[in-house]
Amino acid sequence: MRTRTTTAALITAGLLLTLSACGEDSDDKGTPPPAYKITKQDTDGNGRTVIVEVDSTKNLDLVFNDVANKLTEEAGYFIQINCSTGGTEHVDNRLANGTKAVGNMGAARTGLDDGKTQFEEVADRNCPAK
Image (cartoon, rainbow, N blue to C red; front, top):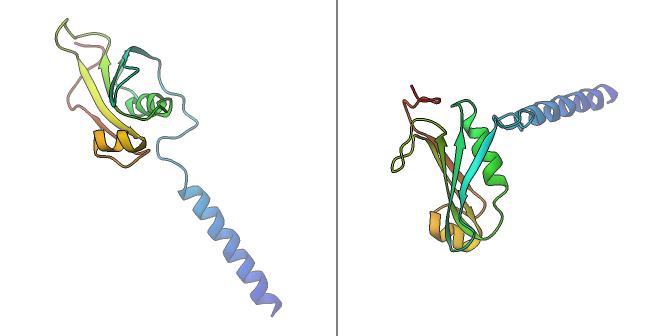
């Protein structure tokens, strides 16, 4: 009987360790996002645009997550990440696009469930621009 209890305890402990290791986010919460600058942020309406500039294509997902985590007012947010170089007055050097829904209005505006995000990098972009 004692052997079963010890075996069960070891299995339970091993399972808990495995689950805690699997529960870590793939974007490594210990890594800070690269430097970025918010150049425009709408503050009213149901659909709000946030434009962010970066100097590199490295860890754009961390930039997106950092920006999105700070958006808490009910709305649908459309986050554009651009390279600080290579754009023109009328055309950005877009590196990535993201969306976040906050509340029912945000969900209705974005098509995402409340609190959910969607992120996608634009293929074949360079930053700094060549």
